[in-house]
Length: 343
Image (cartoon, rainbow, N blue to C red; front, side, top):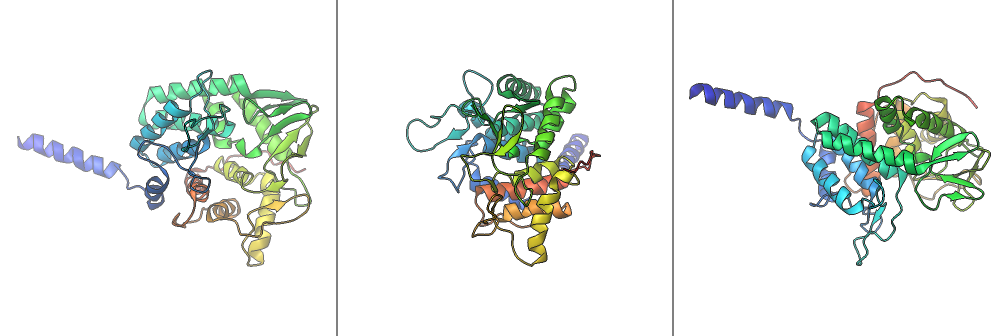
């Protein structure tokens, strides 16, 4: 009896030692943005939900060893956002009205994040069903979203609405480099290594204006040349800020692609001023308000290799997500040798 009690006590003690406490920001994020059923709410956008937000939180859950929250997130995502015709996800959920998922289109960044999170979670917690779901999603991405433009083969942002007679519209921030690296390593004989390399090349080429910065949306014409999207403001802003996040997360903070971004952010720090939330690369106009705490943390990561230690208190969903993701990236990043190429 004493032996059983001792063994039980030892097991409890080992379990307690193995379970590190969740970081305060992750605890606060779950409280503020994750509903009990596993839906992530965008508090800056009418409390809607996105496949992107589900993917963000699923990646966070893998980083913080939180399988229970991951299970809820994945269950809601799979049940509510899965398309019936392919293993991709409807990009938007609206809580108001009867037709919660009226737009059936998917979003590449959400699909990639979800597939990557499932791979991470499946390997970390030895859940083969998660790994298999990731395989199915990755197969659907390659089967539905690859588009050839000149000598470029790129992933479209969604199945519908991005391929036009004058070119393919892409979002550079949808190139989630640590996910693409993971898929290429997992399937070295597949198309993923080429997809990853083409995405890197596109990021190096899709820089515009006197500041030579990436922009939120880009048009790739039939010859493979890149232009700012004529239908959207040519801004380095809320989307494009994720380009340095994902490059640094994948160990590419030293890539020459980020040199102009670093120079732009460093110019404000040298002057003792906060960087604006966006710049129009064509006109030089900047936002009349400063970058959020989350966006500033991406700048910290790119400039110093470290993330902000700030709290998400008072920040909306997107700023909070960026802040936590940069904290995870700083913890996980491993510098990898890359070929530095100047333009």
